[in-house]
Length: 320
Image (cartoon, rainbow, N blue to C red):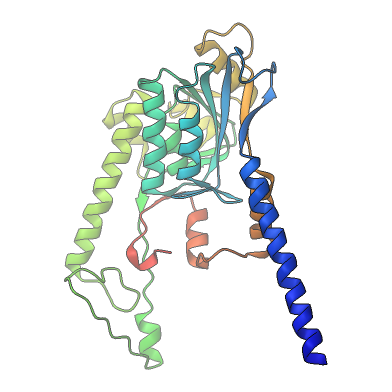
């Protein structure tokens, strides 16, 4: 009898969950994200001219954005959705990020430069608490950059980190045998010391990426490589210091940045501002992820690393 009740209870729970998931899928399919007005005159989708608000918040990585992170795929989809929209004449980019992965930062930078140079979209950045390394990399693609006096920015540099637990394993007599095909396949392995040759290879990779970082910043900021190099090497600046060193164009927040964007777009007054309205179910699952830590397989070490103001090359040994 107890078994029958237990089976019935389990069946009921599974049925409820199945109906819940089905409703989520149904509502998600009929309630896509869309741009909606948040400031200025109404009427997006008509003849009204406006600007799109796009936010880079948290660690920058490939894939979809999370509750507290900026995924390149999500940001690129937002940028491309306004690419051929004649009503969206400008983009206000709000950056609040310590940086992240190289590839993701480069993808977003290149898309912004394409919109700026090829599609004649005016782009202004408003920096928040922090816009360092990958956050600054992306910001450099804008026509103008505004920072708050207390914003942390700059940190033009690249880092790769590979933990080594060989000593710990040796202490407890733990042996790890690696099978590989390819001399360098286990470079930066957790389980052995790297060779001098491997160190040189990684350092060359970092140097190439660092050089590209500086070149891209110089292109976006219309400065010389020599000038940007003199301010790089991973140094972090306050907003005021960044302004004095010409890493940003002015001090201000959203109001000032939007005012400058309106001028660049030759708009009489203040441009209406539109933002993509997130799917409510996405917000629910992002909140669930943030509170309960579910659906997240990231290692604690990576989470801490991604909070630091650096542009990171993730070696295979630390991939997730």
